[in-house]
Length: 209
Image (cartoon, rainbow, N blue to C red; front, side, top):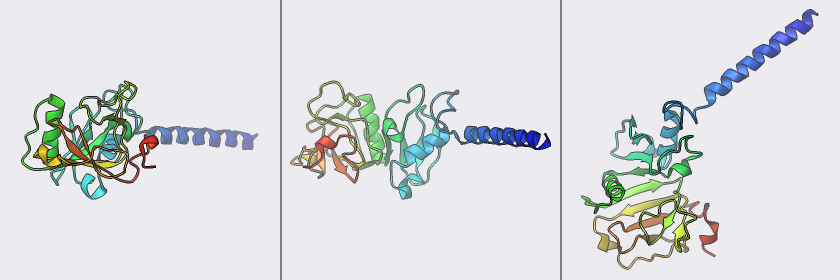
């Protein structure tokens, strides 16, 4: 009888310990008033959009616009997509990006539909990729099922945002070769896409044949 009671107690303690451990380990879907991803999740997801030697020292902006961590290297990591009510499923869904000062100015101009005014060329890392866009049509972000003819959902890549858009003249717009190519040609938002390993993970049909 004593053995049975002891066994039940041990099982109860084990169940309690397991429940506490699972709760303590779930950082993916709380904070922000009980909805969305936690700040810890956001910091890890957004900073890993760049190599660690950049992301580990960058300022982090949450989906709410709040500064989650001050950086020291002049780079900024943040999501380019708004956070859904229940949070992002993974970093790819957030279109996490790490940008230098000039690229931040470019991104702010794109968001406000104004002409980018940069002091120099800018760079953006997006190692988690993005939700896609028509290669020739700004503001088609995430419209995968809208019938766009040249839609490309990108995996890992680096982007060059030029101070002088005309510097992109003569560059290819073909995103199926694996080589760097131009996106949004003929618009103020033209920039160079530089695919890296994993670029075609989300749209393998566009990979080089």
